[in-house]
Image (cartoon, rainbow, N blue to C red; front, top):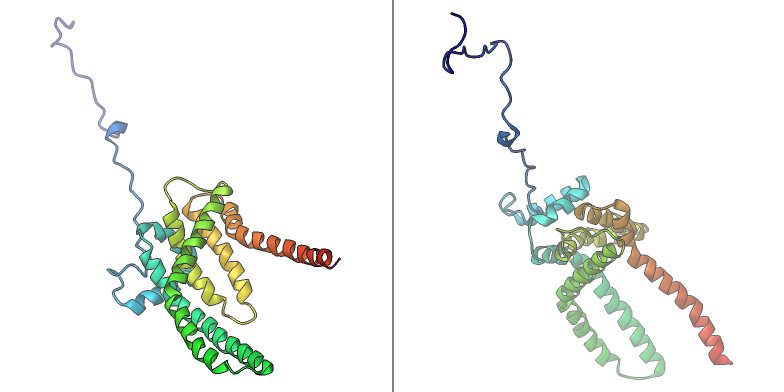
Length: 252
């Protein structure tokens, strides 16, 4: 008798041996591999680069080889102390040159004016000038910090005006990136004849880096970085047109 008479009398289904095993359900699929975390900025990566001057050299190598990676590594750490110290270090040549020019040129102009007027206060002013020179050097850290914060703040605000801010990257990270990048830009600005062009190109690079950080369009970041310069040019043009008109009106 070949018919099945109960639930336990049926034959099991035949499983072919040559078919590949079925894949597990999607719920049991292995999770995707995460992207490797980037190391901090070389200047802050004491674990990988213990030496101070070795970290400075690594910063220059990174900027000249892949400047955009600098902006990728900025969010790896927090705080404004490290970019401020790096900016302060690279600002020393700039401040020394500016202070020496102020000291020699300013003192020469004042002494020449006093000699022409026949006054004898030249010695007093000559004694005061070194004090002013020392005060400028003492205030150098404050000027550097304020320049970093104000510059980063305006870049962040103008990026917001151009619709480029994305959630996840705050103003602190923008200030950090601006501090590191502006340190190299001001050094490049000391190059004779092309210093101004280096500064303009540096502003464009900052805009591209900020766009990369905030994951927005590159043109938005570049426009945000160049907006302060455009506003300064517009204000200068307006002043150049308004001053002659004011002088002419006052002479009538």
